[in-house]
Image 1 (spheres, rainbow, N blue to C red):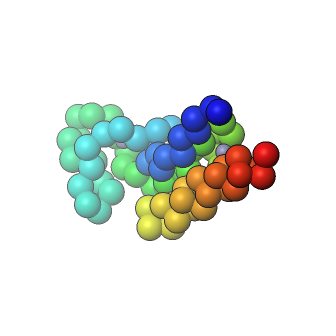
Image 2 (tube, rainbow, N blue to C red; image 1 turned 180 degrees about the vertical axis):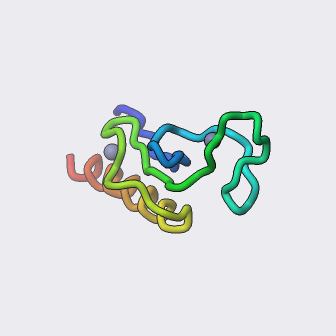
Image 3 (tube, rainbow, N blue to C red; image 1 turned 30 degrees about the vertical axis):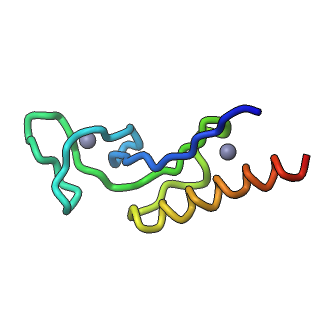
Length: 79
Ligand SMILES: [Zn+2]
Ligand SMILES: [Zn+2]
């Protein structure tokens, strides 16, 4: 049984992943890092890639990630 991981990935305005340190406001902590700030949170599945459209805020992305994990669990249970 393949292990599927679903995670929430912060994104910049151009949809590239943000792994920079940011302030709670989403603004870059270090202006020299080249970070433009986090504007969206994508749900990324190891099997499906991006799940749906990126979410504007993290509190919306997290339930979507949990829901997608549960879909995988249900699919395995049905076999
Ligand atoms: Zn960044
Ligand atoms: Zn998936």
